Length: 74
Image 1 (cartoon, rainbow, N blue to C red):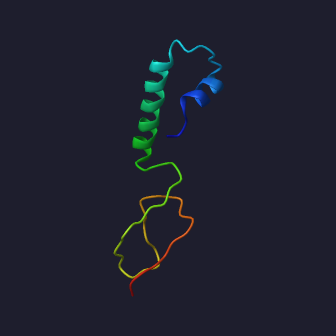
Image 2 (spheres, rainbow, N blue to C red):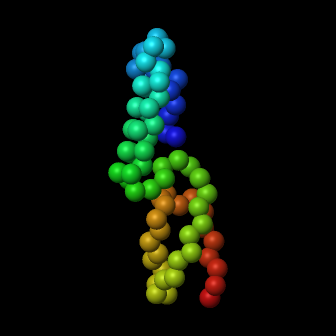
């Protein structure tokens, strides 16, 4: 998740716990909405993509930014 309930409550200045179930659902919904809009996973993670290119130096990847890569094959 991009944030958690405690972080959101601290940012919003909310000190009560009365609305925690509703806020938890709201945080989860906003998290999924942002990821769906960007059409990619936003959190830092390792991904493996197998791509077949036309032999040019350019290769489009689904997840960005790329911090490291490994080439295999010919």
